[in-house]
Image (tube, one colour):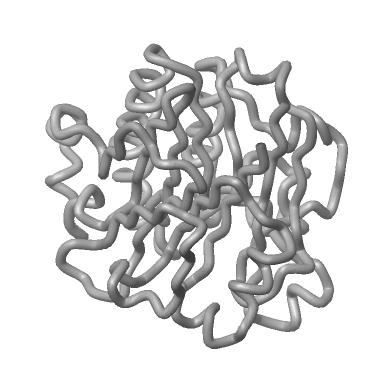
Length: 266
């Protein structure tokens, strides 16, 4: 089974660049998780008859955020957003920017044997004004949800987590220390995911690989110079580790400021 995750930075934009369908034809993912779709399903220009499509879109902001899962098999169930009890428990509906649970940031598909989750984590923002929400509310709420699903059956959750976990995961760690995407609070969120027993698939198979990035700024030809960050992840339940055959980053796939990441399970 091949599972891919890609922040497309706008499904309509990446389609106009004529890269999305060729990407699918080349890699033929069994499951594809998308982030930052910036559209509702009926607004997508792409017809994919070989896939079942499930979309979670922002409720009050058209063309913003959004996640989706494309599967070649019909899932048993699809869950949209975080559970309401966790929204209330962590006060997500009190954020000054609006409730992130209304932004289409999480979608989960129950395939019968496992859960597949696509997530687009809120950005802390350049002035760190959304860091408290990210650190104290969103991250613990999302982790508790993943633990809840993992208690039922194995889980794979993937997407743009908007943080480089360790110095090896970005080109200039010293210069970016304390900046959004590389604060100690955001990095602690990944620490907590790993402490809870989930496996960072890429670092499990490539623990020392450098210059392995998934996002590049538009400034100063960052992508051509590979001055990037690894902020897109695929985490798996600990009991799936023995089935992890391969995990890759695909910087050759263009069309977005992010590139896809993938895993292969036996």
